[in-house]
Image 1 (cartoon, rainbow, N blue to C red):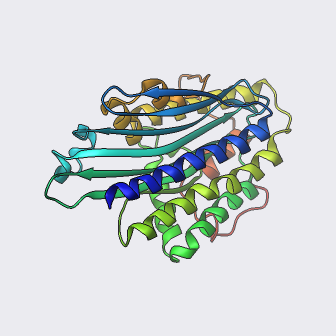
Image 2 (cartoon, rainbow, N blue to C red):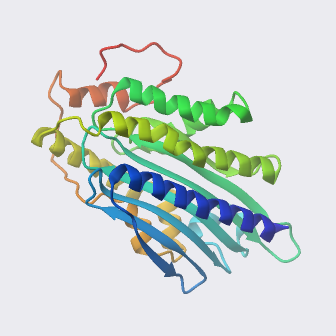
Image 3 (cartoon, rainbow, N blue to C red):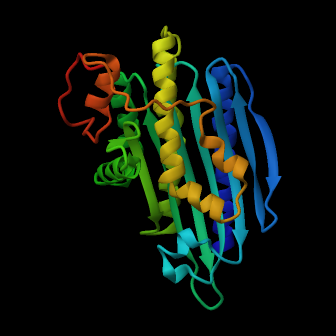
Length: 310
């Protein structure tokens, strides 16, 4: 039973990687290059990366399926009942760093883990989501992003979007900066309530919704003019992206501790970033508007918004 489920999830994830790469390469005009790899301890994957494209300065869409006799410490510390179990972990993860500062960076992933022990029932769960990190946000884009997220969740219950939207706000929060990484989206983990079929259907709904959420924003903003000021601010804000991934992201920790492929795990980092000591945005600027109006949890679909927000 467990391995039949594993095969179903793997087929979906491989197909999702294909569809994401085809659509994103079509937008950029440049193909992803593929790097297949094997993990000595068990498993492997295929990493697909685009660099120096017309649209994307760097992007990656990675599939991995790793397995082993024991889960890494980052998993068993939080879930001691998993100690001593063998595991399979599968997922597709994608990160897109556009050239134009007016096009947001975006990240998403969908994943599945199953842990087994002789004589005991398997333990499994799904996780994933997608989130948006704009540098010069436009309100209509953020509202569109959250509407697609809400609609993807709607068939599974009215409470699902608010719950996973709030979880995303909480997860992608830089505690040491007291700010969110971006404007959020969806985040879920340890999903195994109900049947396997129901949970798998939700994972597919989230994975399948990403392009509908992201590509309209890309198409509206990709030709917006920008100069050195906007580029420098983009690089400064990318530094926050690096800080989150290296300090707080549990997926990065799991990958590194489980003996995953470092090049693929750190694919999510931007090609260029910068740090500046004690920088503050100019009062009344678009950069200040990002900090004031967007880098905090908000009810993007319920509360009234000012039309003149940046």
